[in-house]
Image (tube, rainbow, N blue to C red; front, side, top):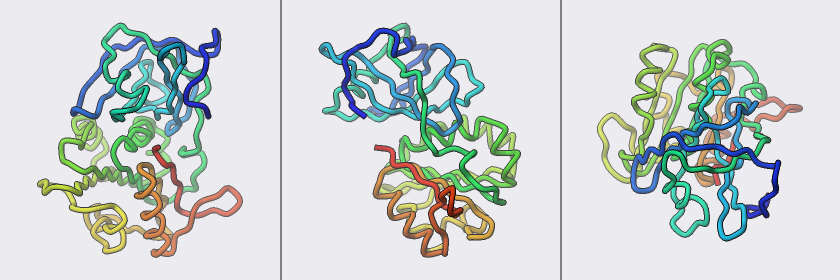
Length: 255
């Protein structure tokens, strides 16, 4: 996929920013009014701006569920990048462009059933999991869901109020495990997801068994985490899930 393309009439949908929430100096969320898109929770779509005569696009996962009228995207500023700093500066009422063709396979329709669904993310990789948690399908198919969100610093643990509301509604069926790697933070695990899988701290914190027979695991985030966590899960006897060869691990790199 080319990041920069010539503008072409009719190939893009126009949206308007309703809100730009700045979580930190580097993290932002855009709530966007746009034509309704048909997508499956967990998928992504390209959003774009025109920059010096080029339409510059990057893939962003939906934070909102498919049933929601307002689109939401969660991003991190790449300081020298052509798009993210400009998206982070958009004000309410300003326009952006959205591709009409969401895609991606980090979706529940690709997964087998299990007792516990593990959603393991780093940074903005939490976005597709928030979309999945917003719908009814996940709760109809899985008895328990564990959301793991790992970041470098505690201020990057975003969407906490939203998750608190969801936990209050779902009770013991939803466990949220937060991890911080570069500072001590009360109520969180220290370190990285792969190590916490291997030494058992992650399962202990969630109060759920991370097992071949009872678990499906979705991984989304930086490639190092995805690779190392996949290896750690394989150490527990799990394998990557494929349509023709069912397993327990489904992955998506987030850059």
